[in-house]
Amino acid sequence: MRKLGSRKLKEKKVKEIIADLKEAKAIVLTDFRGLVVAEISKLRQMLKEEGVHYRVVKNTLTRLAVQELDLNDLEPYLQGPTALAYGYDDPVVPVKLLVKFAKENEHLKIKGGVLEKDILDEKELRQIAALPSKDVLLAKTLSCIQSPLAGMLNVLQGNIRNLVYVLQAIKDNKEESA
Image 1 (cartoon, rainbow, N blue to C red):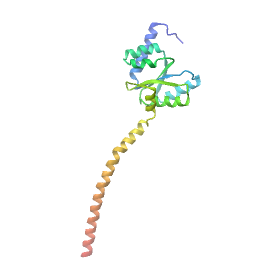
Image 2 (cartoon, helix red, strand yellow; image 1 turned 120 degrees about the vertical axis):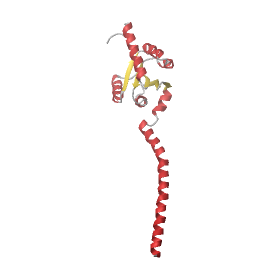
Image 3 (spheres, rainbow, N blue to C red; image 1 turned 90 degrees about the vertical axis):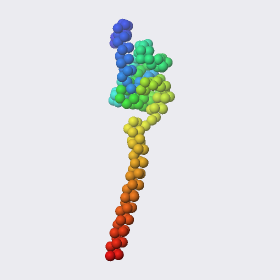
Image 4 (cartoon, one colour; image 1 turned 45 degrees about the vertical axis):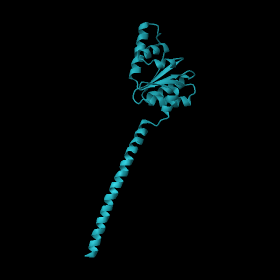
């Protein structure tokens, strides 16, 4: 492993962190103290399967990156060992996965994060993780929109149906009279 001693290497690492912070829709900062290698490997694999990148960072280099991007409110979370989980597609996925893993492994601590440029603390991230998935929310929204329309359609069909019954009754009545 190369040392981070050279200035050019440090500048390169800061640029990488900046690029990741800019591109990610969600970033979750974690403290991984106490996790054994097998647990960290399991966490990395679980995150990787969902398209989430997990990276241990140096706080000093990350501070430079967040200052560059005007995310200074993240600095209080850059204490102790820090790893960043980057979500590039669905911003809620890394939050849900890390909260779930933290429930199963008490050593993983969620410090805070960034969700669509909003800085959130650990409590807010846990609230977001408790929300239903995007697909479930979309299905619920669609059913809320669809329900009144289905009701209105049923009412309109009822009127047409009743008109047909009345016309049929008039026809039957006239046939009996004739």
